[in-house]
Image 1 (cartoon, rainbow, N blue to C red):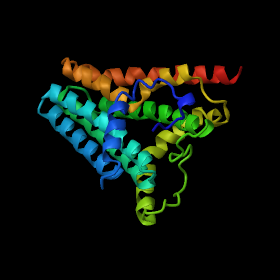
Image 2: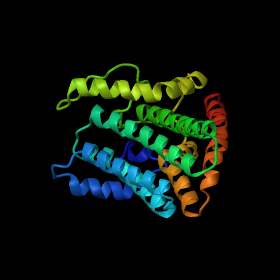
Image 3: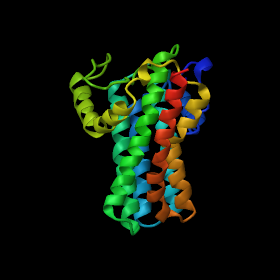
Length: 257
């Protein structure tokens, strides 16, 4: 199952793990496995990648980063095929992504000669890129027919837990999620407050924007690790942020037509 209906789907180059995720979810549909179990597995893959970077096994790190990205798509797929959406899984997934992104950039900083401030800026840029992608993508899902609406355009208050969830757990995870992401959400909203009122975005625009999807970001990092270009990862992530302004300009020009 997809987050968008068939007629609304676009080519998402950051979502290369979806075919595997769909098959895995189908295999686990009638088992006791839950989406949270899958989230924990991709978290372990991410930690292995971080450790591999620290010991300078860069090809191994690249493999586990891509594996993490592929498995990352499976938790949501399993939730959809089991028809068991949950805010617990939604927030836990995002929290894990944030922590693993920070650890990956920190590991790269440790084994390179970049200043800590430069590495922190790269992490900030990585998160800001992903926030723009998620902002537009969630808007798209809410505006098109039969889109997945578990994620909200504005995460401003604790949601009511789905049946089978613990409200206290949802509230705790929401607060952690807000601690990690609220700054980036506010920044993107400050520069793009009218995007939710726009018409659905063209498919070609969403395809271009998907270079900011986490899967594609991790793919770039993985390729650079595998080819021994680790010293260039942090500068690239910073320079890569310039496309944010291009995408916003394109979106605004589309809206003005």
